[in-house]
Length: 216
Image (cartoon, rainbow, N blue to C red):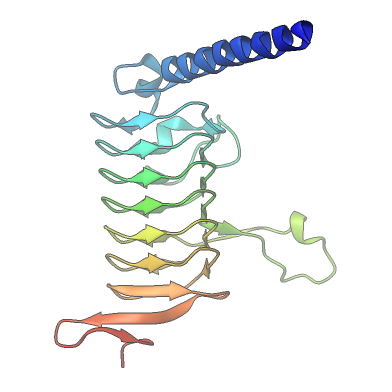
């Protein structure tokens, strides 16, 4: 019994040390504006942070992160398909001031993705401005030329967990997108979106407040 108790105590001791080391490593690996790596971005704002562990990040010179933006752990930020690709627009991905991007999210840009100020996302949100095309029914979809369309997300918006934002989407200010929604299209300010495909569930008017359905 004493041997068992010793093993338990040792496991607890070792586990506490491992967790402490992991916390320390993640703290050290967090990227702030004073780190040399931050200078590889087109813009890395004052007070911004890339929390560790970082996801896949490349073509940093086409990525802009606003002041006081917080990019959560395991977030992927990319421009193009490789780190040495020359892009046709700049920045390809622009994240506004005081945005918070939830852990495990992916922002995959090829042309233009713009997030306004003070946007927050839940975990595992996927935003892209490029999609596979399937015009030729005789060719594998993955080998056909992709299509691109700019994405704009209005300031103050909230995207719930596992939301997918597809190419060509434009969201107005202070938009709420329910968890799991798949969004494509143009939507006005102050609406609640949900579903697959997403539609307006509620809208706001100064006279009547929040009302069900889309604005008339």
